[in-house]
Length: 232
Image 1 (cartoon, rainbow, N blue to C red):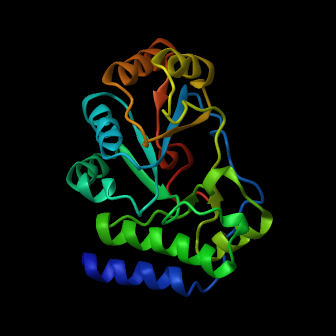
Image 2: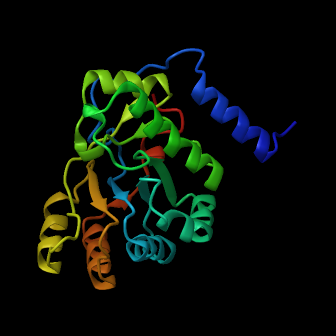
């Protein structure tokens, strides 16, 4: 019998809070995709401070052959404000949501209780709002991590810490020329590239980045598409 959504959410949350066992955890974060015959890279977008920035990325995904992974910082209202479009793109398989904590605290200087609260809070937000279980993917805030942090996250089912191998910048005071130079440098086969939804990129900037992707014969993929649903 198919579980109804309420039962699924209750079960998934309970599994997070009282794990029966800790799944295999990677000792170090990943920053590249596994080898493949398909030329591909992962475009990952963090945070969500700006509602307009989130919407621009969603419009890009909706209107072009682009797949993104959002690392959601759940305290920002942009995620709820764009809920309908996000839900549609999730159902189309063009979007993935992953865990980037509740409020972007430095987890390496936080107590174990705060680390758990930050990861659980974002996890539950994604479950309650979008019906998404984001495990096993999380991104340590600021790119800071320790073996202890990886262990704590693994106890909650977040066994795959994700870093990056190249950046498109965060938009603060960055010119279009600089952004495109970064895209030319880092949008390469096999890379995980980080971006931020904190200051809106112009439509022209985003379109120019898609042109770079097309000219290089690359496919943008979500992490789940690259590693598989049950990656651990």
